Image (cartoon, rainbow, N blue to C red; front, top):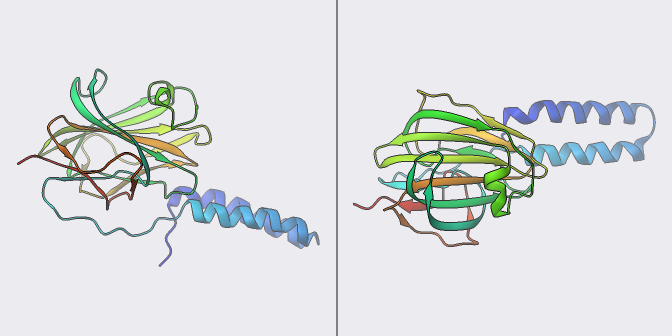
Length: 210
């Protein structure tokens, strides 16, 4: 069954109504343009089912897209310690529903206003508008940062502090192209490489060391 993220319904309805109005006015060839736009919006807000790995200690990708950064950094903002940072760039053609990397309890949600530069640039992580979810898991505290991009101007985070999430559970969406950064414990074993394509909720990014 083809599923649509609820955040896309207002866009789809408005575009479909515009198409109908133009078509009803007799300008059939002009109606083709909003009709194509409606189809693209439906495609963009698709929300396919995913097969969530049941492997203990696995951290799955929070987003569809291309892995653009894997590095060890000191995180001074959220976790305030050395972490493994993995960044995923989401083009307008990727599924944009975000999923929890691991089972845990939401301890904080931090929204920061900012710019809307191209999300694939390293500077975007520091300067673009973003929302960070801090998650307490059995393998340590992690952070997931939804970053708005040049086209994306709307971040949706559906959870609040105190909510419990399971691995692969949907928790938000970024509209029209963006980036997601995940801050993992320093001692995890990363099992992906740069330029690899990931699927939210399915692709294992790292494993906790036993």
